[in-house]
Length: 287
Image (cartoon, rainbow, N blue to C red):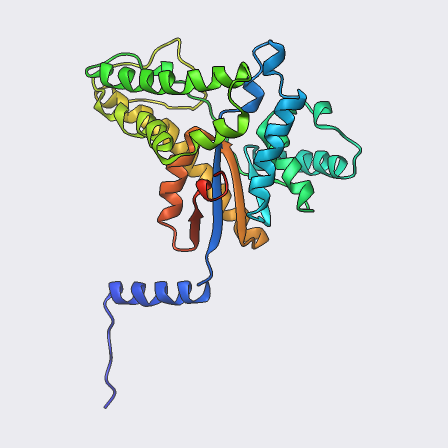
């Protein structure tokens, strides 16, 4: 007599999951480094110019520190559709046919750190994993409990702005600035402002003066703060998808991700829940 064995769906899913992870039990290491965009550092004063000898030495210090991680892939804040342009620029730069000062927005961390480090490590290229959408903090400025959000915004501004000003005045090095804003308390401060505090805000409207390039359609004004969080989270989910699929395509083992600091907290949350990844703390190398 034949005996039929029926497995509950949850058991089948568990067994399948174990099989998948058994086939991919080596974790990809990923080091996330957040930047206050270097291309926005220049305020017109000589001391704020990224191409001064002093600031170039400070950027080289960042590059040398991150070189010790020995990534086999560097991901930058460019969209995948820009990859062919990135490849062409990097090829010329690697062959000493192009200077960073010759590149449009060559002051950005994509080039100043990403290109520089990829050349030092003799990598093939750097990879764009961004999904560009723009939403400003000024978009959310009305509703019940709006002061909780505005107070958080002022705390971040009052913490970060003096540091940036010190860099522009040459009293704080770019290296020390980037090292500081990658500390856990600074990551949590910016993450809380974008992905936590806005949820307190209800019964409001988005400002007509705020910047937003996302097609948001109809919004629920009762949960205006939650709607605001959704705009940022949606972009970062797409960036996360680009990270996963770029790694999968090229089978990299050690990734350096260079992004604006506001992205780091949410991307860490997503990657921490992915069993195929191991997050390396930035302080391990920026020490």
